[in-house]
Length: 394
Image (tube, rainbow, N blue to C red; front, side):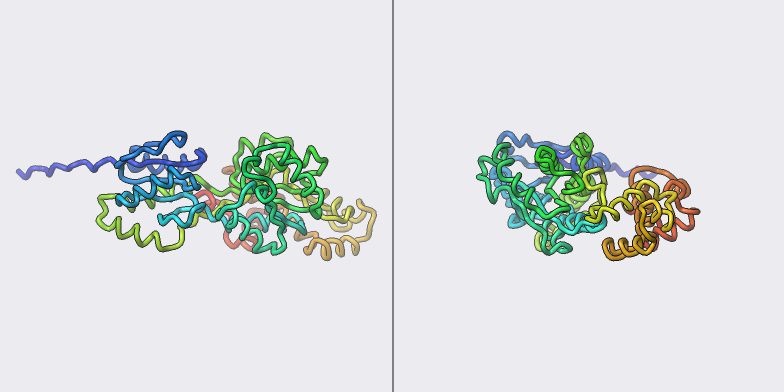
């Protein structure tokens, strides 16, 4: 009788996490992968010295200029221990990277500003790094004249958290901006800072300044006097994809060292964003003509069962020809196209945030039947709603 071969269990891999700031979503992605593959995680305390002599299997890090962490990472690389960076603040450090698609986030923001009818856009951040420049490149790709507002250009580094200096510098800047304008901020924390100053200064949000953050921190975004819209940069997928790459680089792979050298010479792996969580801070169509603004308000509140062009003209006390001219020349689309835009925007929100069926979404958004909804959605976004939902969730 042949004896069964004794299987030696695979060595449990030990992975160091040096993630700053400790964003829960990013940890969620890493932990999910670690559980699936039996890793043992060690979380370095960023408030003390990096652990000297650590000899695990690999590390996931966010290199942000911290001298101690940078030294530690360089030491790991010299000893042949794989490291994957989840950011791009220090591209000069030669390690593989898996990062959010920063440029895409800027492009998505620009598209949102165009969609709500803005004619001006700006960027705001406290400091300026390589990551900030990538976000701004995306915004500027569709807004070549976008203004760049960086607090550290006007305030010493030691005073960046000084509320009085912030107000002293930013109040006149905000008042001088052409309006209506959309401002993309580096993260949701900076968006809340900007929102507070706008409210204190008497600047209407979103009618004069529409504020858009990055990161979709729901705690911050939804607990403001005016809830803040935010680009969903999908840090959970960022963490999971970085963990997967690190897994490919760690022993016992005989080609790990060779693969790591190759990856250090290519562009970072980019994790796509998941669109925008629209809240009140950008929930407007910023147009200057008061009649068109009123027309848009009416359509926004009734797009499920919208008025006809004649009915809308009568409500506003103008002719149908005037309605057609206002939409065509000032908004760049017809009234029918605007109604469809509102229906599809609602549909995308329902597809992203819940599990309603295609029929339920079609009914809730005012489509005459599910087939009409599917055809309209496919024409607008290049794929049917079911496939679009799967890709966004996946």
